[in-house]
Amino acid sequence: MEKSFANSRVTSPLPTFPHCFVCGSDNPRGLHTNFSISEDNARATFIADETHLGYENAVHGGIISALLDEAVIWACYASTGHFGVTAELNVRFKKPLPLHKKCIVEGKMLEDKGKIWIAEAKIVDEENNFYAKAVAKIIPAHLN
Image 1 (spheres, rainbow, N blue to C red):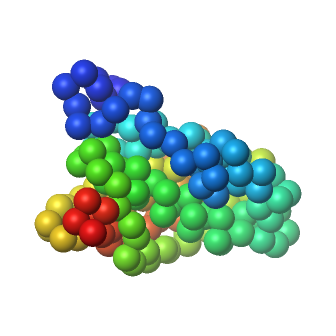
Image 2 (image 1 turned 180 degrees about the vertical axis):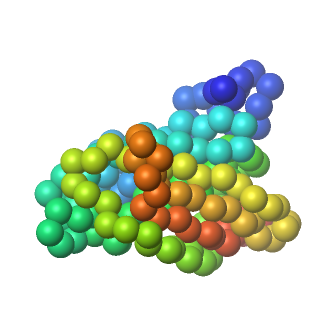
């Protein structure tokens, strides 16, 4: 269920950063990934093409890591109404993500420790095949 923004800490539409590599609409080399949020998670779909190639039909690990990083930030925003910056991102790759495969990137905030947030994200396909996950420590931007 989508979050009702009327009684929420977040605003609708979501704030955008036009030149962000992952979510920016004005970055000509960016991924142009649009996240939506609900309760305490963030979600987006992504289809990689040849510009995201790592090797032989597989998405580059840096692209996968960038998507996971973006998902944890949006998940924290969904839960708190504030942005943060990634202090640590631990990525585990299960198997190569093929090009031209629609995938789902989903993040969830796990814990608010005050000066640090803990969040996780994963990438699966529409058949729920698992490709990668990350656990992150996020520094809340409003504390800086």
